[in-house]
Image 1 (cartoon, rainbow, N blue to C red):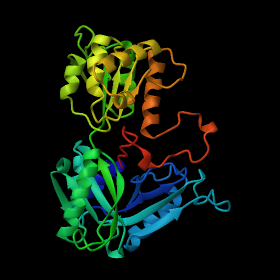
Image 2 (image 1 turned 120 degrees about the vertical axis):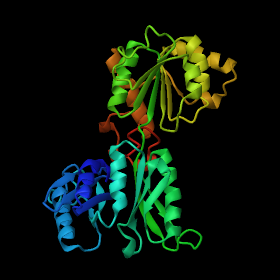
Image 3 (image 1 turned 45 degrees about the horizontal axis):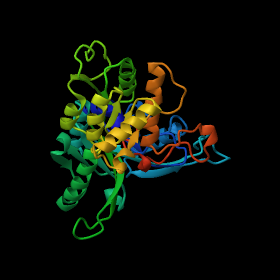
Image 4 (image 1 turned 45 degrees about the vertical axis):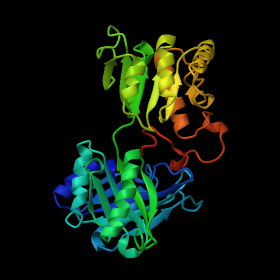
Length: 383
């Protein structure tokens, strides 16, 4: 639902009821991930999408039905069938399940607060019950203030505390996911399945080396949703004017900056200096960190020399195995812009356990399971 936060916030501020259709499960080649939503207002206005167009009409009718009747939340499944593929089926061949419910803002005021914080850029999570006893279906709980508080209720204080603790962990990881809670007296008696919608701070792309390739990569990284930092020890090159697409440009020795930088499992580190006096201390530090991707530019000869130098510093082989070098996929890239595409393509491939092969040569579903993702904005499915 957080993918349409601006409109939902306006409706909540106006105390306007609306119907919310949320994708709660996908399989096969379904085009949009869990958490994506479509909403319909009392005047018939629709916002968002749950399938890229395949089943929007049928879901719109369900939304109108629930909105007008006030009936409890309903679940509907859509899949491919030869007889009905172009009516309410997914022509791409996947399957999806949707939860459709009526939202009365006065009954869930915490949603207004959560949506307001999303628009203000504050990390927020909304846990929505998508399976369990019927009386719980559609209830929600919001984790606000970057995890410092929660509001709303799923039924009891015990259940709320249990869910809040689980959701805070997902918020720190920046990952939308399904979770199961309860079923025992120590947590909560009712077994519930929740879809946790996450609005997290963007993951970081740290680019070391203020060169023309870094300028192109910072542009591509910004486009993909990263918070981009360019760092170089040379002040004449590390300027905001040379890197207009970077969120910040830092003048510092790369390894010294990285030692104090905030990183997590979604962070990507791209070392473009290919200069041993910068690379070796930087990579020695980087390879110890719990980041998602580390790549380094240079020829194969440079890479072999770099590995040998790192071994002499005591860097273990299991750390060296994490290094993507020469950086990027084999796209035949030559220009800085082409190289930036090559690098980001490798990051996306690594993120989703992709093959890097043409889709025409890969059997099976085009869209991989979200659970296979490891980091990056593509994995941070901001619902």
